[in-house]
Each structure stands twice: as C-alpha cells, then as structure tokens.
Length: 362
Ligand SMILES: Nc1nc2c(ncn2[C@@H]2O[C@H](COP(=O)(O)OP(=O)(O)O)[C@@H](O)[C@H]2O)c(=O)[nH]1
Ligand SMILES: [Mg+2]
Image (cartoon, rainbow, N blue to C red; front, side, top):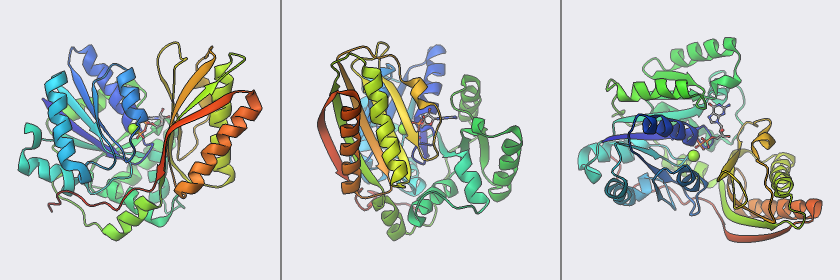
C-alpha cells in the first residue's frame, strides 16, 4: 500500500491533483482512498471526493499535526473499509511544519502500519514567482510566513497552475525557483491535464524520492498568528427558486460573495462552493482562490429546479464576524436580485486555534 501526503497553501490545487491521480490509478485497476483535513466540520473537499465515488475519510476541526491520533485512526478505518492500493492525504492549506509533526512521527511510531512514501507540496506558481521576485504578496506577513515554511520544508515542490503563465514565464520561473531551492525537486504543472498528473504520479511511484526527513525551524508564535488571521466559515445555504432558474441564483450568490470580498479588499485564501441538489450530473465545485480565476461562471451547470443547495467553505484574511456578515449580505443580495428565498444551516465561523502538535520530532 502506498501513502502519499499532499500539502501546500489554500487553493493551490491539491484536491484537483488528487482527483486527477485517483482517476488515473482507477483506470489502471487500482483502488484509491483519500483522507481530507480541515479546521472546519462540513467539508466541501470530502463531499467532492465522495461525489466522485472516491472513498474519503476526514480529520476535521484542526490540522493533521494537532489531531495526529485521529489521523491514525482514520487511516486504519480507510484501510479496513476500502482496502486501497494507494492513499492520498490532503493536509489543511494553512498547515506547516508537517515534516516534524507528521512525517517523522509516522516514520518513528509506525502509525496505522503505514509509512509515508512521498510528500508533495503544492503552491500557486504565480505566488511563488511573486515571492521570489520580492513583489508584494496578497496576505499579511504572518500568513506569508506559513506559505514560506510550507515551501521550505518540501523536497518535492509542485509549482501549480503553470498553464496561467506564458512559455517564457514558465522557463523563467523554473530557473528562478531552482536557483533559490537547488536541493528540491521542482515541477511546474497544470494539474487539470491528465498527462501532467501522470508524470507527477510516475515521479511519486518511482521510489527515488522518499519524504523529507529534515524539519524546519518554526516560530510557533508567528505560525499561530498567521493561522489566527485567517477566518474560517462553513455553511449550507439552500435557495428556494420560484422561477426554477437555480443557475441564475447560484451565480448571483457566488458573484455577490466575490464582489463583496473584492470591494472590502479582503485577501482570499480559498472560498469553495459545492453546488448540489439540483445538479443533473452530481456535485459541482466552484472555487475562488487567492488570485482570481476568470470565467468560473462557465463551470456552473444548468440547474433547473425549485431548490439548490450550496455548501460554502470560506477561508479569508479577516475576522470571523466580518466574514459572517459578508456571507449574510451576499445571500440577501442574491435574494433581492433573483426573487429566491435563502435558508441557512450548519453555519460556523471561527479563527483556527493556536497550533499545538501532538508530536514534534526534529
Ligand atoms: N488553471 C489552473 N487551475 C487549477 C490548477 N489546479 C487547480 N486549479 C484550480 O484552482 C482552484 C483550487 O483548486 P483545489 O484543488 O480545490 O485547491 P486546494 O485548496 O489546494 O485543494 C480550483 O478552481 C481548481 O480548478 C491548475 O493546474 N491550473
Ligand atoms: Mg482541497
């Protein structure tokens, strides 16, 4: 059984890459299991993996590091129930110090009778390029500290969303990153392309690249401050749609959220919407990541129905109260604009607790 750990910042493309890899492995007749992880309780990613018929278990309410025993228990459960040939575990995007708090404990304690075969750290290539060129980052300094530490501890760094670069920028960024990080294996990747996922998987399966074994120095005061600066909101919004045009309501709601975030200049970690209920072909996920992605409306399918459910997971740099207010306003805007009526459920808005890893081995 192979076990691949996937880390990296919010919205960098971890889930996209895992889904792509799982599809590929399933085509080869292999069984795949997934562990998701988040500070919240109602996770878009878990629902999304399950909608893709992938067995997924979750570690909620904190990162793998701070819920190490739960991670072990979930892995055992996944092994027993799905008997996967390959397991992917996706860590929460604001988590760092994984080598010292997850990888080394696994290697030492033999948790769930598994060893970690590889650790891939994903980052948006555009953000890494900005950082390496000394250009301003879209987050506060303590959040950038987390971003930096994630990259520092990687031995395999995936500079993702490389398709959003010109060919020249790809070459330039690859050279820049390799010069800054001569000891890392660095791949520029478009994780939506199956052949690029196949190349990444070939590297993971080559056996040439174990997990990193040297942890980083970590200032937990800064790490905790960075985590605390991100507000988290989970909620389920159901719209009753009298005219049956649920697609219009969905777009109005997401557009209102995006518009308010922009007007209030709130930096986005990752805002995810899982549209379900009325979708003819299962669940559809829409993302608003840190750097805007054009044309997300195109991914909203035609939704004919008198009701649509949207699960929201928002991770942004503001206060929990401000985020809650923003989602409320967006819901009202969508109601006014379309004549729909919203019902909200399972809302929780909070700041992640100070990181206190179960183990730390350096
Ligand atoms: N253009 C582009 N978009 C990507 C790529 N990988 C992921 N995305 C998009 O980035 C957003 C966040 O992806 P997701 O996998 O959910 O990120 P995660 O938070 O790291 O799991 C989604 O809208 C994806 O479609 C990529 O290689 N290229
Ligand atoms: Mg994800």
